Length: 372
Image (cartoon, rainbow, N blue to C red; front, side, top):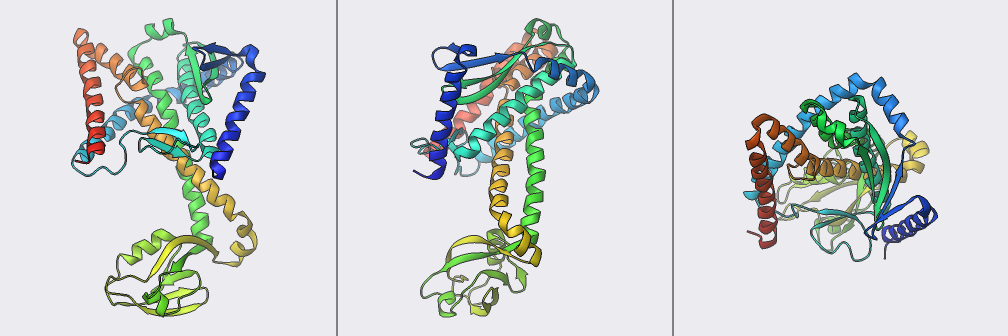
């Protein structure tokens, strides 16, 4: 059992304790769903929504546009995968890395210490976006809260459904699309911070470490130290090494700069150096990195991984939620749009669109399983 699994089990125990301590305020449904409603945030959300209503409604229009972009990307990805080999399951359940959960190809396991942080961020940003767009259009938020399906966290917003049904089409579409757009904004923020962190790392640290393969060019050249340059090209990380390796030719002589010296190595007939188990070394490039940043490099590495998962899951879950399938937000969005545009035929068109979407996903799953 690794550290991620131990942390995950510890967090589950902590959640169970919190549910027990707050049991008087928690509503239990079907013996496995625990709901905690509150109205304490309603006034704050309403004040923010009314104060920034113009900005929020402009963002709401962008959110509507994002639904069509998201569905277009989905269709492109589906038809692309139908014509190429699929190496990753087309649909995956995102779960924390706990014992026994990561054996299926249809489960995306995220380190537990990230999962229990990122899933609440996704849920809160999603539901808060719904609440803000509803409040900015004078649709009351009745309550907000959190929930647990056993120990899996979720958040929810209860709107005034009567007012929502009476709202005009544009308002409904903005509210339905707001949740995933909130996730996209979080993903964008994570991506920008990720670029900044990566810039700090690449500007101040570099090199790769490795193991020598016996009877290889690296072995016979007595290659040692962290690789910093190859043919005067900086090697900041594994991707740089992979990139330059693609330019190698059989029996070519290359110059490798390491922390212990300079080596002229003639590659083998397969254009290989003869190294394995390559890892980023994060070797300080300058005095500032050595004296100031070296103590924080592990934080940067962990934070970079956290931002990567935050970006990936917000994009993935946000796009999945916009598919035209009820009860997903995308289903509500397209049903409302098509019924308004085509009246009685709108429901039939929506049902066809939903069936077509599900059909495409099923075909991809079958293709992945049967490997055709």
